[in-house]
Amino acid sequence: MTAYFDYASTSYRKPRCVYKAIKSYKKYGVNIGRGSNKYSSKCTEIIEETRQMLKSLVKADDNYQTVFQPSATYALNLLIKGLDYTKIHNVYISKYEHNSVVRPLFNMQKKHNFDIVYIEDYEEQFKHKIPDVVIISHLTNTFGIIQDFENIFKAAKKYKAITILDMAQSFGLIETNIVSGKVDAAVFAGHKTLYGFSGIGGIILNNSLKLNETIHGGTGIKSADIEMPNERPIRFEAGTQNILGIFSLYYSCKYLLKLGFRKINEIETKNFNKLKTILKRYSCLEVIDPQVPCSTIVACRIKNYNPENFADFFSKHGVALRTGLQCSPNAHKCFGTFPSGTLRFSVGLFIKNREFKTLERTLKKLHNKLNKK
Ligand SMILES: Cc1ncc(COP(=O)(O)O)c(C=O)c1O
Image (cartoon, rainbow, N blue to C red; front, side):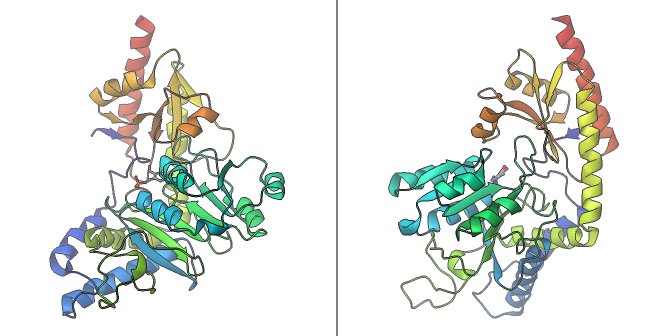
């Protein structure tokens, strides 16, 4: 790929140290909690350190544990399907949620009697319809909006609501304190802003949040018991875990913690501003500006054209981006870009100058092509 502008899908370019995970896997990639040999001990040590580093990235204290899942989607499914709905009447979500929140929630609504409410004027809404659960994506995957979850969660906690923050697009990117932010569960995707491999995600979960397991199976402990053990995180981690994926997070978390949020923010802001400046130079593109704090993602339209028609054009010129609805149709309804969607460009830490140059050359060609028509 000549110019990669699809970090919101996955961080294709990663810190070089992350690939050390493969070497470690070759050496220590045995199962955890299933044996007592020295490789198993080392493997367990790496995994436990990774759990701690993930907690450090969101400043979680001893009241939280890291639960590994195969992806952010699985993590959100566990949270949404594992709740006890006997006392849940109102679930609030933002208007920008990803289908990995919307679909499991609507699926659960078919089985349980609760309302799904879109957050608008939340303080007023909460007074009339008490929140039991609030789910918000920290950084929206369509328009890069940084959502003000802290104030919403603070207001929701007055009603003892369960608060879930989808950090698939922000974990390791935006400095966050989930304790002061009153977050009960923060979801991460290993392969995006955490720069790990795909196939690993999870939750930083508050111990006080009551949650049922959704997958049953072997845990390596209490095997004689027909029920899943109560111990966390193992209760939610039945079966063999993605050890290679966790090893990749071991190296990427080390890298991110060493780099620090100030530097991460500096690089991301520089790349984001550069991307916006380039895209705004071309009159054939309508850059959608949500007029609120944003990061990493810039969405555009091409007047009178369906964005999907340009996917091949960009691909032919070596530019990776994402077209369409990006699994979040509701967000597009808010910005008038439903149903055709947008051209979504997104940056990460590892964009090179030559990639911006390739993008500029491609946009010039697009401009000329459209002007000829
Ligand atoms: C905001 C948000 N939440 C959840 C997900 C799901 O992540 P995954 O596909 O890694 O399960 C995504 C993926 O793009 C996302 O952008």
